[in-house]
Image 1 (cartoon, rainbow, N blue to C red):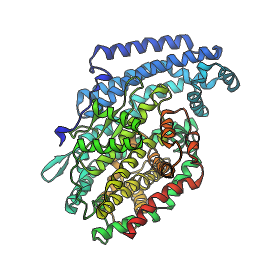
Image 2 (image 1 turned 45 degrees about the vertical axis):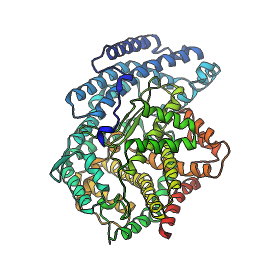
Image 3 (image 1 turned 180 degrees about the vertical axis):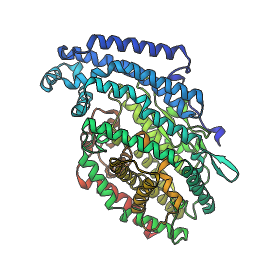
Image 4 (image 1 turned 90 degrees about the vertical axis):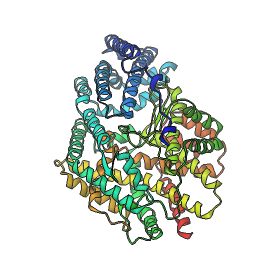
Length: 586
């Protein structure tokens, strides 16, 4: 199947790592950044509204050039992180871009230093008013910024600090080989076998992964401890009240809203995951489930391989039935070399959509094995890609959305695809299997991600009192897994090290709740759509086009939804519970 899978062409960013175009972009950005600092440092309070808008526009241009360079380097590295030359190029670009952007640090610091009333008066100029959303979000961090010298030091040390540890994690994961059935397989390939119909195969895969991670667990514990301590130091200097505060502010969501989400989900573990997995154990004829049974197909599930062209058709048809415009944008990703779906050593595991920069286009990475879940992953990542295309008109500074809203289009794309497939299925047995698969995906998105968030919260809180040995990290992992998955499971000892393969813990601490936020939000949105809400499609597209210019309250208001209302989360969780009710009655 891999021979027929697409691979991306990164030439739309740069022709190659050694290309004159890349060097010219870096040299030009460096000249611009130095000139910008010479012209504006210490002088922003003297600028008119129009002058301030012009300065922001110049800053945006420089930042977009640097963003294009780092997007290119990151995508090359994701394609093969075991290639030493690519690793060296990635680090070199990281260091070069960090050095150039050091000239720009003063700008956001001084913007946040402007008097509130004086800045408000300048918004009378339409050119500056365009940037109001960006300045609004920038000033959220005003109480937490340090003086310019400290900010510059932290920025420049990033390449030898968090960034270097993250790279070590990525290269280690990519280079690991898991011996299974006489072959040395990548982590991604063996994780895929945890969904194999054969229980002995799943068990062998689960134990093999556990064995490989156990032999490397001291390294993963060191990386995790170091980054957690690094975060504590920075959070303390910036006076964030708790380890999750920075992420919540970055997501432009109040601490209380996240707390309400986590409380709602964890309070529903028994109604959701505990109940479903008890049903699954019965369907599989097992007294208890092991961790390698969590994603096992049901006994009657003949999940035959789905060829790439068929996956494309299913997803685009589902998008098109909802909105022709959505499908038209999505089709561009397939018609052009914007997707890398093949399976190969060294490639990053999992899947992502990288927005790159508005002057280019997004790229999607998948590891396509041909399963139904892979089709759902394609629908998910394409949702991100379409969202990023629609928001690009907002420009580099305002196209990006907080993580909580970034997951909306992706999960909605999954829901569209699932509903289309379910509605087309007439066989009751097959519909039951599809419904069970959707419930599992939703539990993985909501329950599992909130449990991940709870694990991170426990780990970061305990790390503040000293380094955690790997065994203690494993105990925290098992605590939240037992609580979230419920009494249907008994966990074999090797599962204690499975925390080590989750990249979000390393790259983006506390990212994970955004998946649950997005899933519950989409469930609520989809129920509004099903109720025949007038003009839903256009309102939905307008929401995506807004990019990062609006907060979640403003984006949801046209649909009559409010994420600060506890009933909002209950509405989303009720959708999952309703599916489980249907399965229990079948």
